[in-house]
Image 1: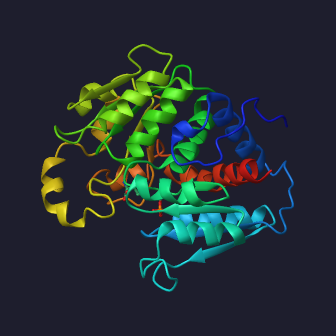
Image 2: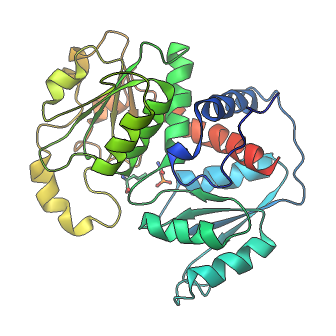
Amino acid sequence: MLKPNKLINKNFLSSLDMTYEEVNHILELAKNFKNKSLETDFKDKVLGLIFDKSSTRTRVSFQVAMSRLGGTTIDLNPNTSQIGRGEPIKDTARVLSRYCDVLAIRTFNQSEIEEYAKWSSKPVINALTDIEHPCQALADFMTIKEEFGDFEKVVLTFIGDGNNVANSLILCGALLGVEVRIACPRGYEPNPVVIDKANSVSKKNNFLRITNDPYSAVSGANVLYTDVWSSMGEENKMEDKDKDFKGFTIDSDLVEKANKDAIVLHCLPAYRSKEITDEVIDSKSSRIFDQAENRLHAQQALLFYLLS
Ligand code: CP
Ligand code: NVA
């Protein structure tokens, strides 16, 4: 398979670190890995994982992806390494990148992951920050492509907090030419810098609509997407946010108002009965568990691309 012409940015810190061609290339590779039609042997390659926040899907899918590529993973627990003691990122990054071939990092501030990338001699992958979750977006658009074949007529409506997951959907959606709508309570709109960046790369006029009305946002949509109302690090805001997000649950009634062929996505983990009902997660419209599986294939493709 040919690589796209433009070389990838060494790091994947944001959805916009890839070009349109690169995202499509990764999605194609991911499809091949899913079909088991691509063999690799990255015997001596090592992925280092640094997770300052909890994770099930991202951590395990990275570990399995690396193992399927023939390589190995080291999961650095910040509490049992010197990271939790506060060793400067610039020292940690310089040392770890002499041992590992690629690093995947989950942390709070985007500036921390940028600091890792600045000092690491090997590629750094954003495994979630407060501002973006670009690996999630790759799996999400892979799932959407599996369902609809291409992105041309896709209308993606995200209902919930204008957070990291929504930001990466907006940025990757802008690259891929998907119409994106965000329905959130007033005050929970996505980051304005992200919106500006997305508008600057989008070739579609009015590709993005932000509204406080979930019902108008789902009309004509073929993908409904949600995420938790309170993200990791916001546990103390949960009571207030639960009140603010009343009326923003994806339930059967809301799904009924979307296109007949609409599918439902959620990055997981979910609070069943808050942002989404049990009935919808387990309904025939749900592709949530295919989406979770696709984390593995998309990240295997990403690692393959960065390490080849
Ligand atoms: N969707 C996602 O990133 O899940 P984890 O927090 O379990 O990694
Ligand atoms: N917005 C959520 C996503 C979890 C995968 C969080 O940051 O906790």
